[in-house]
Length: 132
Image (cartoon, rainbow, N blue to C red; front, side, top):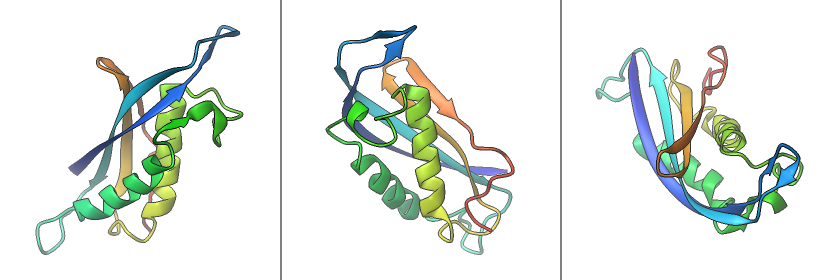
């Protein structure tokens, strides 16, 4: 199995609710690492084009950059935890990568770091593939 990772970042604020208590609004410089995986390389020796993933990731994170996450969908109704942010990015990326990733290549994971040493990883269902 081959894996390819692309990293990016964005700055955004959030205020979590933890055990029923709201936190004070605070910001992070979020780091995002996206991993795609597949069993074979193309005739050029590539799993897929880095730039296609970078572009899709920039579209997704661009909407979050310099925002109060609590005020934008889906976090206006969903606690904007690192876990939910990772899942949201994965779901949005999966939609954007349909038809972009080569056959057999899938989104393997999204890792979101909100502070050094503090990361959440979301792995989409193994049965869910971004490309047919």
